[in-house]
Length: 479
Image 1 (spheres, rainbow, N blue to C red):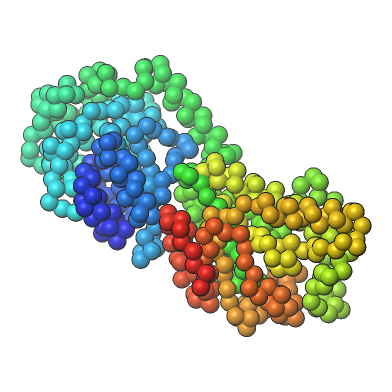
Image 2: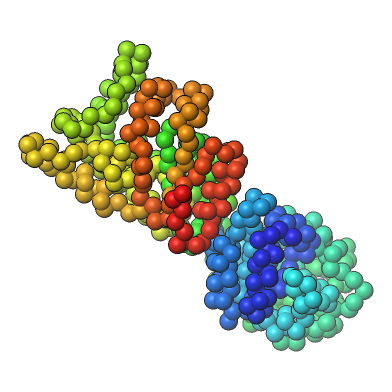
């Protein structure tokens, strides 16, 4: 069993929170090793207590954009030892039915805990209870054309689960569902028969018996399915949202050139966007908007010309003591664009996104990604306007939730930079000056982590993921 699940189960037992594994027996061993989804049932009255335990172990709650159902929640935890994400399906009531709609809420809480075996770390159900619940779920699902199509797609999964739980025991009745012992036995006989038509016919009968537990009427159910299928189609083609964090949050990866920040940002996006809604924003060179497009384009053209003649240019320290209006205007535009990007990042996080910022502003004058315009009362009104507003932009930027500051010695940064093939990259002389100018730089982060990026890339990635996934908000590591 993967370590993070073992810790979770032990804490649930110690806090007296009842829980059990109630479906998905075919892949249980794989699920306990962090592969696939693990389905747990916890009574609704213990929801708040479970959330406290899950937060302490750094499980994060997420919402499905395509299929959000009442009493069903998704939790993900990161196991730092195995470097795997663990996915929990938390059921506070037994919500079941076709995959898309889950149109039934079955009052099985009392039945489940009467049939729970508590002699293992992960409590499970008796053989009869496993069979009963499996058969009810099966016959609810295949009672419509859409349900049949979904079943055919997952047929092997159902057969594998039945192979695990079947036995010589005769299924028992569940009388608060109006399911008698005879009906349970008939479901077993028909499931094991070769006639799919007979299975579908009995499915219609079972759904009629359970109709009082439907969440939606017949027409309401059809309307929901049509709308949900349209949303899934539109999302797959255009929006492309994955699971959304509850709540979303903003992180930043910062560091000097050669520290590995861009490689780490790209790897985090690739890894996390497989399952989660992730956006990457570049705060070092932020995107222009309609107010700054032309000034930034002009500066970019000058920079390109300069880089094409780099062999004729000698690197020198930045002198901000007597800044020209042109350089002040450039600094003002960058500050404005950064301010806009920080607002965009926070708005995306409110929608449930994990926002990864490649670099993030600081407040120390003259440092990397920080204010550049010095105070000079002898300058004209335009300069004073640019100075005051650049400061206002930076001082009103909200700190990211977690900031990871990658650090490497100069020699390592120089070696890595020499191996890069990027056009316009810093020369060795420029990089030495950049290191000197930015000694002791700090950026805007509520929780600040200094990461030694001389370690292997995989070690750095694992450390950052563990820390960003942690739900503890009081951490401040500035070693």
